[in-house]
Image (cartoon, rainbow, N blue to C red; front, side, top):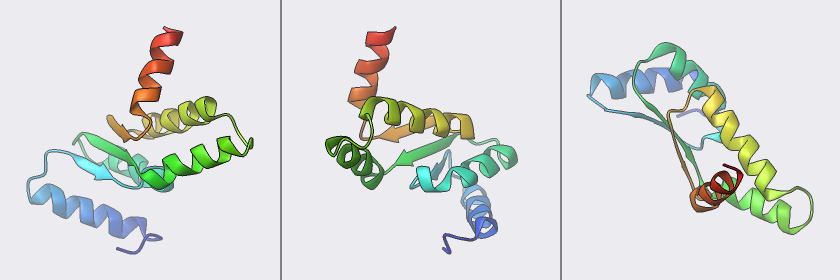
Length: 105
């Protein structure tokens, strides 16, 4: 699939739905927030945003170099995925997120 062609992505999702999928998965999530938005506007299926290892690694590397603060950046990115329309978010940061959100709650 051409990563620059959102219309093609939507056609692929439509074909998946016609084949009987229960959920729509968008991966990598961060680079395709626009696809998540369009899918939310178009389909009734639950949408999963899959935050791939490269997205996780970018935050960890930037944090290790002192370029950003990992917790804040992770929370902002996960919020963007949710705001785009994701019902479910799969992320390598799940354990950290649970700890951060429980500590704040």
